[in-house]
Each structure stands twice: as C-alpha cells, then as structure tokens.
Image 1 (tube, rainbow, N blue to C red):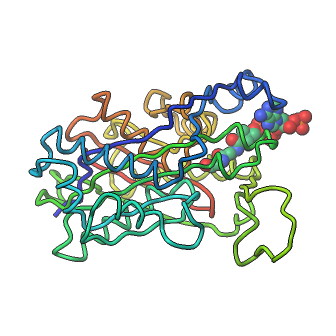
Image 2 (tube, rainbow, N blue to C red; image 1 turned 90 degrees about the horizontal axis):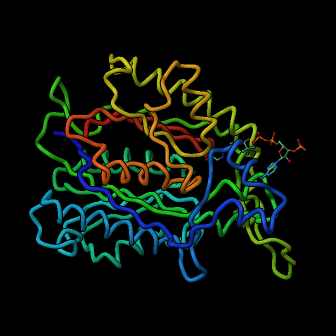
Length: 344
Ligand code: UT7
C-alpha cells in the first residue's frame, strides 16, 4: 500500500500588491523588502472572501485537474468529490475561530457526503501536518481511499498593517493535493508516495508568533473597547533563527533516516517564509540554491498554503516527473516543524 499525491490545485486572489504599492502607505521600501526577504509582491483577498472560499477554489481545481489528466475514473470533479473520505485543511485564519471547522464548510460545498473533515492548526506547517494526518486516516481504515489535503490562509485579515516588520511578509492563497491509497509498494526500492515524514513541535516558542487576543488565555469581555482587530504578533529574529536551524536539521535527518544522499532528491520545496532563511540553510549544508524551489518573489509567505502552492506550480510547469524524489520542509507558529520525502 502507498499513499500517493496525484493531482494538485490552487486558488490565488487576483489582486496583486507590489512592494512599491505598500511603500506608498507604510514606512518601507521595495529595496528593503527584497533584500531582507526576497519578496516582490503578494496576492490579497477582497473583503467578500474568507478562508473556506479560497480552500474550496483550490479543492475544485485539484479535483478538476485529476479528472482532466485522466488520473481518476470519475467523469467529473463533482463525481470525484462524492468519493472523498477525508478532508484536512491546514490554516491559521479559519472562517471561524473555534467552530465550525472551515474544512466542514468545504466538505458541504464540495458535496462530499461520506467524508470526515477537520482543520489543523499548525501554523505554516499545517499542510505537512495535514498530509500526515490524512495519510494516517487512510492507512488505518480499509474503506478509506481518498483524501484532500488543503493549505489555506488569509493572513492579510489578521495582521497589523501598521507593523512594517510583519505585514510586508504575508500574502493570501490556498492550494490542495489529492491523496490516494494505491496498491503501489510503500516499501522497498520501487516504493511510491509519501515515504517518510518527520513532524515536531517546540511550544516554548509560543510567544514567537501568536494571536494574543480572543482565545481562552485572553478572552474578550463585554463592553471592552478593542483598538485593533485580532492580529498576529511576531518576534521575527527568533522565528528566523528557529527556521534556519530547523531546516538544516530536518534536511539532514530525513536524508540520514532514509539512507539516501542529497543527489537522490530532485528538488527541495521549503516553506516560503523568507528567501534568506532558505539561502542560509542551503549555505550551511552546501546545497546549491537551484535545488530549492522558490516562488516567494510572487506570493510572499502564504503560511499553510505556501508548500502546496509551490507543489502545484511545479506540477503545472512539468517540473514533477513520475519517480522524482521531492523533499518538503516546513516550520511555523507553535512552534511547529515538519519534513516529508515523497516519490512523485
Ligand atoms: O512562516 C514563518 C513566519 N515568519 C518568518 O519566517 C519570519 C522570520 N523572520 C524574518 O524573516 C526576519 O527576521 C524579518 C524579515 C521579519 C526581519 O528582518 P531582519 O533582518 O531580522 O530585520 P530586523 O528585525 O533586525 O530589523 C532591522 C531594521 C529595523 O530598524 P532599526 O531598528 O535597525 O532602525 C527595523 O525597524 O529594519 C527595520 N524594518 C524595516 N525597514 C523597512 C523592519 N521591517 C521593515 C520594513 N521596511 N518592512
């Protein structure tokens, strides 16, 4: 048995905001943002769009791609949606904090009647946590065969647009991957699909990236005046240090545990938080920059959506060939981290 990623899809807001546009209303410059982060623009939602809307768009796109490319027997995306057994949505900006899960809204709108659906709160590692959760759910029950894993975030709604050290970093977006339990080997030289995953957390970094208000630690009280909407606060340098260290350790650990060299890995797809993080980790490990797939210049940090957007972009551009070994590396609020090796 193997758990294979078959189709991918995405939903990116059409409104593209360049660094120069931000600099018109914020004390920043295109030069600062590019040189400190590698970001050139971001895509932002309009005020009618919520997390589940983007997630739904990405889901339909992935299902449509699966049908169009003849990867499934179902004749339409709608028919394919009916066969889903699991929907997992990684997000830190759900439609509703608490309940219901945005994944349930997606499940209903897709018309997936026999399906469990849940959100995963693992910051920017949400897609990798989602992949492992969905894989486990498929593996444990014989009757479960198909899952949709989505990463969707609309952090533009939850950042302080006056805080220049945070707001320039984030963009909105969603992307999805269809996971199938197949008869291909999960072990041995011919193994396919997700072959190894490491997940971890370090809650001592709770304060490094958090939304302080609104939860049970700091609930709102009746009559209280709220100056700023709920928003994420970040200790940028602490996250930066964690991210570089974590990337290095994950890459080394995945290669060592799998018993392969870096040459066996076609591309590394890291969370797109800051090009400098990726470059610093690459330099430490002597990995050429071309080995890393990067699209942060266009989309900025889309949180849980960044890895699946990158995967979808590679897929669309013919950069993923059957049999390629791909490494995914994530880190984020929590603090959380994760790495996966998969055979495309
Ligand atoms: O998904 C995970 C999410 N988060 C991350 O991955 C973030 C990780 N951290 C980072 O990427 C970097 O720490 C940042 C990009 C956030 C900041 O870069 P930095 O090189 O660590 O800058 P800094 O915080 O040390 O600030 C240097 C200077 C400060 O000015 P002073 O105090 O030296 O005068 C900041 O006020 O840069 C200033 N600054 C800016 N200047 C222009 C901070 N943000 C901006 C800005 N434009 N947007």
